[in-house]
Length: 145
Image (cartoon, rainbow, N blue to C red; front, side):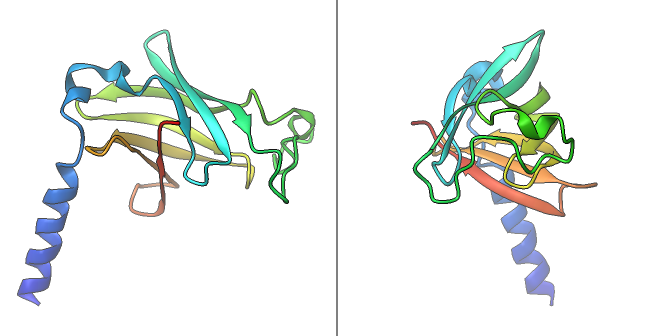
C-alpha cells in the first residue's frame, strides 16, 4: 500500500510538470485555431479585455450525425442558432501555468462546465471540463491544424 501512494505521488508530480515553460512568459501562446480531439470542429481562441475566449469557427458537415444547429441547448431560443459562431470558451484568466476560472460549452450535450486548460510539452492543449471540483470531469486534448 505504501508503494501505491508513492507511485500516485510521483505520477502527480510528473503530470504537474508537463506544461510548456514558454506559457509562463507568454499567456497569449494559446491564441489561434485549434482542432478538438475528434477533429470535427475548429475553435479559435482569442483575447478580449484581458480574458480568453474560444469561438467555434468550423464543423465537419460530412459526419453522419452532423446537425448545423445548437439543438441540444436547454434554451429553446438558442436551439435555433447555428453551431458555427458559438462561443465555447468563456472568461478564462491566465495564472502562472494554466488558463482557469472559465467555462466550456459542449454543443454535443448542450451542457456548460467549469474548465481549465494547460499547454503541454508536445504542443497539445489539455482541456479539463468539470462539475464542482476538477477531480470529477472529462479531459480532452486539442491540437493545432
